[in-house]
Length: 193
Image (cartoon, rainbow, N blue to C red; front, side, top):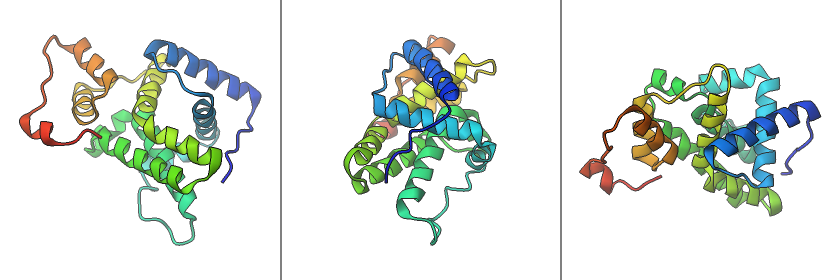
């Protein structure tokens, strides 16, 4: 399974510039392969609005269709979870689902792709899995750069920090209150995702 990294140069440059700004603000720096993958994903979503509707409808988070290859199914799951958690976190509130669910599901899909893939492709998916949370946080930062910037709600920030240890979510909590968040004893026994 080869990565398709061809795209409209103007769109490519615009997305890379926006990612570069988000990297500077967030402190995250993507390796070239991860940046290429993310840019191509963003171009696909921007050029095909039905993909965004699919992410928001979560229609792909169902059992694998019999006619869909396993690798394509896992890629759809990973991509949609990344987009949902990173670009549309406010939608989780309307579905009463924790963002960490999408972080865990997307991370696992990319991990399986990394294990099933070969060569460079397998390595890219392994990096996407290992860096899933920073990618989500980078997309949050990128989204906030836009006119309709969406900040995490206090509840989502706390849940994301509590479930994953997200540094960005903790900064969001600290920007709202001087209180220091504390994990409950039950949470301390739960492994971090």
